[in-house]
Structure formats: structure tokens, C-alpha cells
Length: 283
Image 1 (cartoon, rainbow, N blue to C red):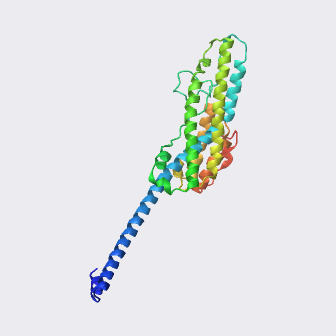
Image 2 (image 1 turned 180 degrees about the vertical axis):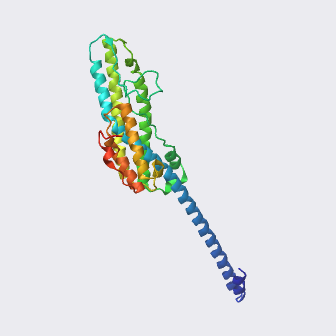
Image 3 (image 1 turned 60 degrees about the vertical axis):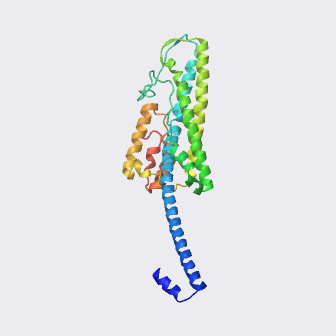
């Protein structure tokens, strides 16, 4: 600054004044540019952190969507078998319960006569981001896509709790006893309501899986938390299939996980052995 003042001293009057004003202006501009750069860097860091959390939730959601698709044949089998038995005219109800259907299900008092997974997915990361200032810097198309995705996910979570509640009202069919034609008709009506809601869940899961397949992830979605190497990941998936078969039976369709496997490969750069996705493949 002293150097500039000495230069300014070589002139006089308005020239000196103008030179000093220019120095001040340059200083202010530099300060503003520095502050802007820091603001941009902080905003980018905040955006990256938020998007990482959001996209990790999407990765979890896709995993659960594919699970829902995988057990769809089992759901249809459960409902068809129960409907046939409810249409009988025997005055005594004698439950026929699948051991696999009620495996590893300690949270209900009675065995369940119908079962699909209850998988709430967090929408907190998106809701927090959407209400913040950083949301205005997200591309409109990306914002619309994420808003639709998480809105549908929230609806699926709400529907899942309602389905779970309705299935509880059919738990009496797990107990042997007298049953009237009216009770059979009421149970069939309840089965129809459950079937409709569960069918909507399946449709949503399929549609969102397709939409996520087209979504361009901006981060790795913390995919490495699912397995640091392809070898570790290939050990996780067969165990998951084994658990699903123990719960629902051999009707589980592993090929439904193709979307998640392909996304994992895209984000991690690993090639996963897809033989494990074939129906009836060993654990």
C-alpha cells in the first residue's frame, strides 16, 4: 500500500485522489471475490455432503424396491392359497401355515397368514435439503426427479404400515376354530383390500426401480459401505437370498435385484457375478 501511495504522490490534486480511490476499489473487489470464492466452496461442500446422504437413501430404497419385486411371486402364491381355503364351506377353520412364512418374525403375537416386507426408507435427508437454501442451486430437472422419488417413497412407507395393520386383522386365521360364511366373506373382503394395496406397492417399486436406473448419481452414494470389494459384496448377496427363501420360500425371484447389482457395478466399477441372480441359484 505504501508503494501505491508513493506512486500517487508523484501526481497531484484529482489525479492523486482518483488513484487512491482506484486502489480502494481494487481492494474491495479482491475482498468480494475472495468472499464469493469461499461462499461457493462452502456451498459446493454442503451440496456434496447433502447429495451424498440423499443418494445413499436412494441406494437403500432401490435395494428395498428390488426386494419387494423379488418376493412378488410369493405374495401372489400366499393370497391365492388363502383365497382358495376361504372359499371352502367347512364350518371349522383349520389353518395351514407355512413354516417359512413365519420364520424370524418375533414382533407379532400370532403367526401371520400373509407377509410382505415392511421397509420404511428415510426421507429426512431430502426434506432437510429441500427446505434449505442450497436447494435453489440444484438443477430443476434433478430437483423434480428427487421430489417425485421421495414423495412416492413416503407414500409407500405410509401404505406399508396400513398393509401391516390390515394383515394383523387376519391373524385370527392362524388359529383353528369355528367360522361362519359371513366371517369367510369378511376375510375375503379384507384379503382383497390387502391385495390391492400390496399390488400398488409392487407397481411403485417397479416404477421407481426403473426411474432410479435412469438417474445420474452425483456421488458414489456411499456404495462402499455395502462392501469394499466385489468379493465381499458377492458374499453379502447370497446370504440375503438365503434369508429371503427362509422367510418366503423358493418362490423368491433373485433376478429382481438386477437393477441394484447394475447400479452397484456402475458406482463402484466392480463386475459382479450375475449367476447368483438366477431363480433357484444356490446361496
